[in-house]
Length: 455
Ligand SMILES: *[C@@H]1O[C@H](CO)[C@@H](O)[C@H](O)[C@H]1NC(C)=O
Ligand SMILES: *[C@@H]1O[C@H](CO)[C@@H](O)[C@H](O)[C@H]1NC(C)=O
Ligand SMILES: *[C@@H]1O[C@H](CO)[C@@H](O)[C@H](O)[C@H]1NC(C)=O
Ligand SMILES: *[C@@H]1O[C@H](CO)[C@@H](O)[C@H](O)[C@H]1NC(C)=O
Picture 1: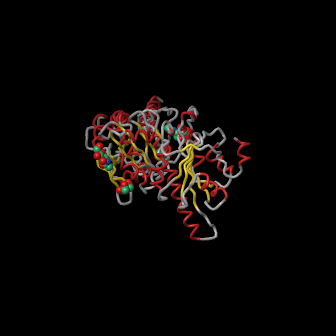
Picture 2: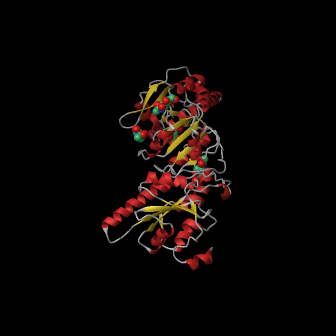
Picture 3: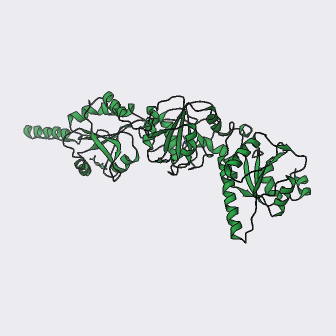
């Protein structure tokens, strides 16, 4: 009996010892476990230095490493990623064999370099197995995907046909910080990064920026008039969320408001064919939208039955669209609210950024916004076009244009070649009031009586 009892208790002890040791990082907030199912996808997503520890749960050195590895992961937030693979797990055997893992732990560091197939190349980590040493190593190999730009280079950069959204850091610092390098590496194949050091006043005004550093994002590819200013803390997680949004073409909560109200409605160059069109576009948009500061009306001929005329017309509309999109932004137009900067300590926070932490606080009074000018077109040969040409004494050279400021009852005819840059330069002067003459008559192009009733 006694013997049986002893054997039994031994068996219990043995089975306790053999109880599967829990995978070391199973519930770690900083170190995520990888498997063959997600390994390549997770690694190829980023170009930040990426540590992968191949371990076995029973190995003493692995257990000893765990807390340093976790510490390193936490401290390297923003510049490096830390993962682990349990080589004792049957389903991971192939993965561990692929990287010729011979002993435990083996730490591989994947750099920004890639194989022809797009997989990241790795090196064996040979350094000290302390958090300090691992973070130091991560810093030493942190790549930098951010271009240095001058103010002049900015438009070229934005217009670049790489089709990627852009994030531009405006800063007083000459050097590229690790934070910005880390972000540029995190999004290396999703967002183009750049930095402008000591930006000129003109650049700050263009974006309505008053404080440095800040980040301007261009989510609408190649369209420099569509930008968002980051208003949150200059910290990794909130910035990464912001840029993540940019990369997925999502509007941030705070920039959505002014865009929707003041600009999104009028992004196309619309035709003015009636008094109602003129009013809704240039004079009184209704819906509590602010009265436009200025309206540019392109006077363009269109004889739809002739192909040549259709082509010329399309060209002119393109020019006007370019004018609309490339106008300079002013004042506080792009400003509003503050970003929520809720940050979790989850190192992979960026991979599963809380998609639905809504904040609706970003309302701003419209009076503070300086809306961009509107751009419309009118057929020079139609009733409306002929009236506009007469009223504003436009030259007979077509296409031409007129700038109207309904608020100031002032207007200016355009004289010059019908190309976007000339028109933009002229429009900018008009916007500031140069060359605008007051006029005493109603802006009533179709039906005087109707206009009187309405205004
Ligand atoms: C082995 O890995 C697979 C895939 O990651 C996982 O679902 C499973 O729970 C793991 N098994 C053990 C014993 O950890
Ligand atoms: C556009 O972007 C690509 C990729 O980032 C770069 O190689 C190229 O030099 C850029 N072109 C210009 C004109 O900046
Ligand atoms: C990286 O950083 C340096 C200095 O901070 C900068 O001059 C360089 O243009 C950056 N970008 C790239 C892609 O090397
Ligand atoms: C990201 O987009 C979501 C959804 O549009 C929005 O609720 C959130 O506030 C945005 N976050 C940031 C930091 O811009």
